[in-house]
Image 1 (tube, protein in one colour):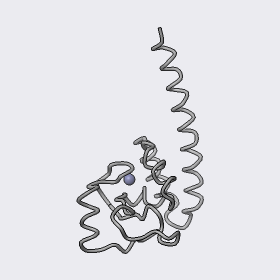
Image 2: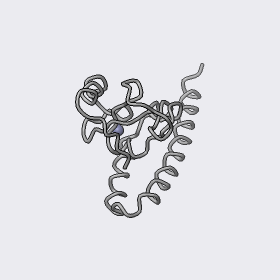
Image 3: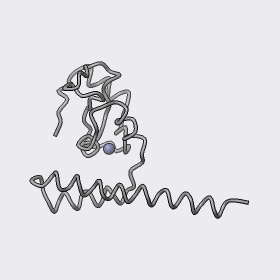
Image 4: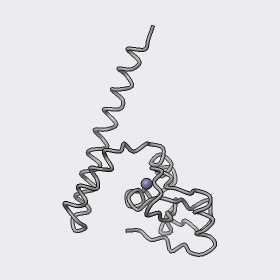
Length: 126
Ligand SMILES: [Zn+2]
C-alpha cells in the first residue's frame, strides 16, 4: 500500500475539494494519492494530490497521464463485488495474483463495453 503521508491543513484541503473517491465516487476508506508519485519527482502541492478510496488507490498509476485515464473509466459495481470476494479469498498474501486477475477482468469488461456500444448504435441508427 502506497502511503502519502499528507496530514493536517493540506489533507483537509484535498478532502474538502474532492469529497469522495475521484475514480469510483465511494466515500469510505479515503486516502490521498500523489498524481505524480514522490519517487517520480511529484510534490505535495494541492494540484498533485487526489482523494481515492483504498481500493482505487492500490491500483492507481503513479504518472499523471495514466492517472487521468484511470479515473475517467467508470467502475461497474459487480467488479467491485468480485474484487471484495477475491480479496477475501486470497487475503493479503497474494496481492499480485489478484491484481493480474483484475486486469484480465477489466480487459474483458472494456471489450464487452465496446461491443455493447456498437450494438446500441446498430439498433438506434436510421
Ligand atoms: Zn474508489
